[in-house]
Image (cartoon, rainbow, N blue to C red):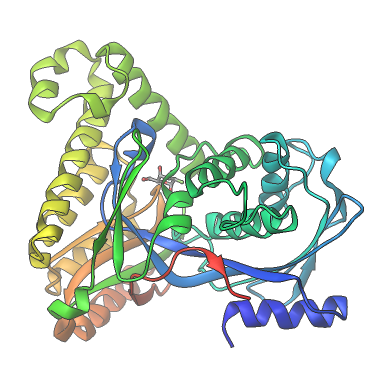
Length: 392
Ligand code: GAF
């Protein structure tokens, strides 16, 4: 049974009736282009097969009910909430994500009648694979459905607008100062493709990406590490790069080339130089990766991934010991390239691996984690999968 079928079944057992619809949205891997989204830059994500599904039935009384099956297999029920009375800080814990989406849709002018939501997902949580955005995007689509504004219907908002509403929920309701990468990936990626997305211009290009056809795999290594300073660290980096753009008198770091930054770095205080260097060189790495993807030279991606990791580790300083070990051990065992993904300070890394080397890489990474006394990592091959949509 997939997550959508599980959500529908749980809906029937909780509400003794069928849901009106089931919507689901995936987690993501970002192939390259990290911490560039909030600098108006370029990103290159693809969707994971792991999804969060939301079974929904409209209510007429303005009330939102939310239940989810947790990782522990138990059912968690949020207190019933009146959508019109939601405000930032009114809801805590996991219900803040779906409730925040209802709040943000209301702020964007959508009139929601109330809804029963049953949520079931298999996106690994706390792994930097965007489980919270999978949840928020699936809820956004389910709630728009109750307002008869689901994608495809008359007056439906476009996916870019839904992504911005979900970002508003995340930033201003859940209180996480994140960019637009994860929502866009979850909503707009398509099977067997990476999405080359230009954040400033809201321009997306679907580029075919099927590593298996070239005898390669993208291996995800979830380190299971999560460091407590991840939120403040993210906010600091975001503020630092905005300040660097201001001092360089450009709208965003997207507007400066690597050569220009080199010659003008004296205009920045020392602590901001490496931050700016990461963003500017990372945008350049995304563009070079896109060039290799267009010509099908997948093996050439490896060195760019590893350069990206070094830049995130040494210049942006968002890696951690577990992520560095994942990358180093994957490279030692013969990966073509490897990097941390997502916000950093824990979560997952990816490695580009020849299929025949996969077992060796897997074994070596696990052995290194055991030797360092870290929790056993979770490894799986990431296959570019479908973006969000209606399941039934
Ligand atoms: C997190 C954020 F949610 C994204 O917006 C992005 O900034 C990413 O970190 C780093 O690239 O996933």
